[in-house]
Amino acid sequence: LSASCFGSSLAREAAQICGQESSGGNANAEGDSQLSADNVPLSIGLFQILLPCHAFGSLLKCPDAFESGCTKPPSGKWKLKSDAASRTLYNNCVQAAKDPDANIAKACQIRTEANNTWIRWSTAGSCNLL
Image 1: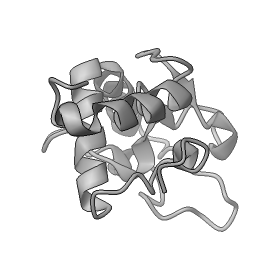
Image 2: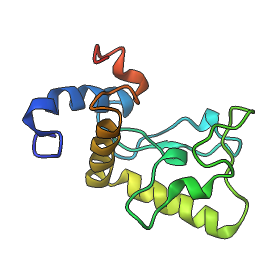
Image 3: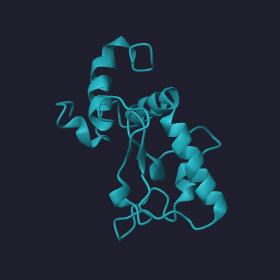
């Protein structure tokens, strides 16, 4: 992680978050299916990137695969759109999020957008990073 956008100054913190989020750094980790009306995993990869809320590059606009985008529906469960294109988009987003380099880059972006804090990760408190 020290060679990533986190640099040596944040590598230890990033490793703590990554280790907690993906059970020790499993790039194929999938989670939060309990928050999906379709019982599909919503948080993917090393930093458990929440697909309904994050795109990967300009082509994989993952929120577009979900009926409510990043807005959590009143039911509390995100739902995939029913068309084939949305399912394909979701599958492509899962693959992108499982790529360690793409996942780390997205985590860097999310942290930067959160005023350079770890607040977007639920494990930040237990890692004493809030």
